[in-house]
Length: 532
Ligand code: G4P
Image (cartoon, rainbow, N blue to C red; front, side):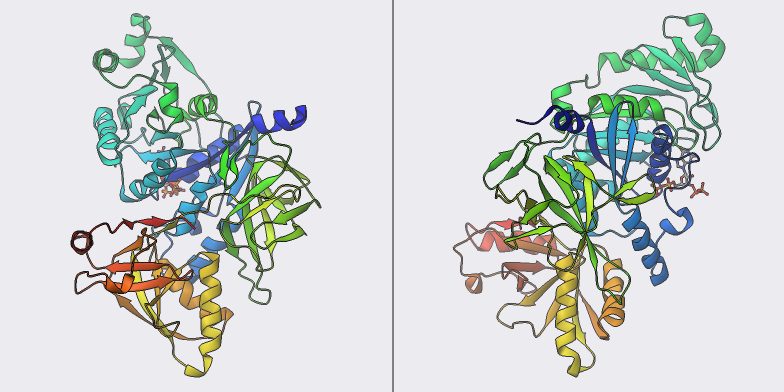
């Protein structure tokens, strides 16, 4: 059985990812969280803001972005008796699989939405992954200090676009210049808006009970007061009611309104969120469900980050600890490599400083030096137990290109480089059925990865490449084990390929062709992502 300290440490862990469309306010909200945790004195030090956002096609930007994401992948801080791990999901316009994988390491997600814009495309994609994992999703409706959409419309938007019912925990009173505060539904209390200066904690806090009409009228004015009363009646009459079990199962999203920039509603959100979010969840391995409180250490690799220093091709493998305690210098079994080893230079991020970890617990993320042995989804555990966690799904890329090296003499370096980059999970590579590695087709989730690939092959492997984009937009894995892929009949634009693990896949130009192919081949099961 777990000792008392182990149990206490694990119980106070809360590990979550913050997801949003770029510019919705993820960075600002994270900064404010850190501020409450006392982890930083002045908001603004989470990352070099000017460079972190709006990554464009310029490589320098990509490089900075990558540099930044190494150091801000995970932030740990303490607040209110909890030990919080925030997983940062890369926030550029473009999109990589890293984001998906990061969500695999989280136990819940905070979705930040710009209240003037509602649900945006990026949010939709990220949300799909959260929904697939059935993890609790909390919504922070941001930027109420600016003119916002109608709050009922915003909730409808989430319900219609993302297909998840919502439960407003508080309710905004006006927006923009007319923003007067929020109504806390549970406590039936109006929290009056105060525009605190950037970088300071929520200062003056004025609260008025809903029953105190006189005071409310004074602060809100007649029309805002009338509107609030009307809204409260509507909310209590209709709307989803709060149901803890549904929240835990990711089937109901509690919604909080606020303004990260002016730091209003942030602490309220953080406190409620921490009350509702879960301690480290049990994960499933090939031997069954593993209890996080188990004495035996175990973790899985969810992300591999190549170091930008090309003299040393080192990489950092990020691991999510799923059970037990990690102590520096301990021996672990790398299950897929079948080797007992010590994890070298285990690191953790406290606020914005990297430091060597002495101890870490289930729920924590550590980054270890990877001499090239780990793959995404690998398990490490105490040598006395042996099991492998379920793999991390490979998601369908949406952009494809045929890639070849310009100098035919450099074939070997080219294949080595592109294979290594694919192993890190930055890109996926495919080859046409029965043609071996002659023709390589690269698939990426976001087009920025094409540029990363070109740059890295040139700089790290000294190989220049030619890339011809292909018109495919959809890829499907074939779930049927006993199928003769060569005999499949599809549409004329369909291409049959295999991936690094020799699994057969089909490429399509449009979704109509997918449907036709399914109709023409009875019993064929096509999947949008594949379990590793
Ligand atoms: P992101 O990480 O999701 O991409 O968004 P980020 O926090 O960087 O915020 C994007 C922009 O939105 C920033 O403005 C930020 O100040 C602003 N913002 C965030 N939260 C709020 C809010 O609650 N209200 C208002 N009015 N603005 C908000 P910027 O002008 O692009 O950058 P900066 O010069 O202010 O740093």
